[in-house]
Length: 355
Image 1 (tube, rainbow, N blue to C red):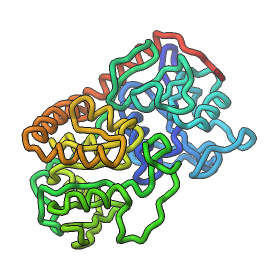
Image 2 (image 1 turned 45 degrees about the vertical axis):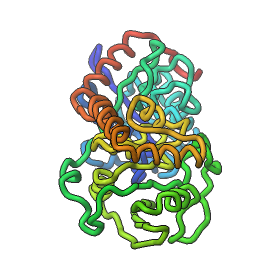
Image 3 (image 1 turned 180 degrees about the horizontal axis):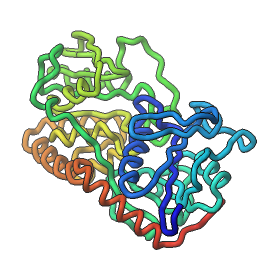
Image 4 (image 1 turned 60 degrees about the vertical axis):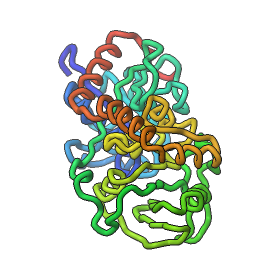
């Protein structure tokens, strides 16, 4: 490296996991960071040849696709040593790898905007907040948001196989994202037959029997009306899901993503308000004006009933759309925020090596 040159390394165990919100966030950050500095992407896998993945080359550093290796089996790839190493704040293994393999590099973590949210985060380590949250409260917290793209064609054409609009769209909670989500069972899946909804979805189907309720789970949409199953549709692409979101009356996300609650952001970018559990990244977005949040089944049903009031629904949808477009709809703005954060990080000392 030349004097003054910045070289970054990003460690991600979720990079290659399909549907992973952590992987989506890591890829988005890498894209923004690549506009301002040299960046290497390090992933779990047998050390060997660099393999291409879109705009990036992946450098395996040991272990397998499910996790990082132990100290004896890990090694830094054949690449220049980085100035900064960027890791998922919730990935303790990545933090350990960074300290072990690049002890002279400063550590930067990414995760939800609430600095108390990530597990395993280190005090006074720089943190890139990607979810909607209050303004930074320290020199080490940098709110950068993210870019969450949507396909505008989804709003112009509804899903061909459904042909309905104005339904309640429920994103299921059969596999809770984490124990932090109220009502979850520590990540253990509920057991039920495929055509039976989970408890929360069943309450919604029963309470709003006069409305069409579409429950999406594992790329399958179950269509319910008058408490009876009307049909089953497969979602083959992300745009299929976006079409359901864009033409829903409201979205209920029973298991929002832990980083940005991506589907809730997409919902707001179409002007559709959402309902989500308290204590989640989605609840913070809702509190800013994009929807409602709940703590139990009673509050869930009440929140959905409130969003059937046209004035309330339209007001929250418009307010939420403005927030989502400002924070998640501008790719150049996202790059600019990341660049400013990196400038501040370089000018603010932070711990180097193990905490």
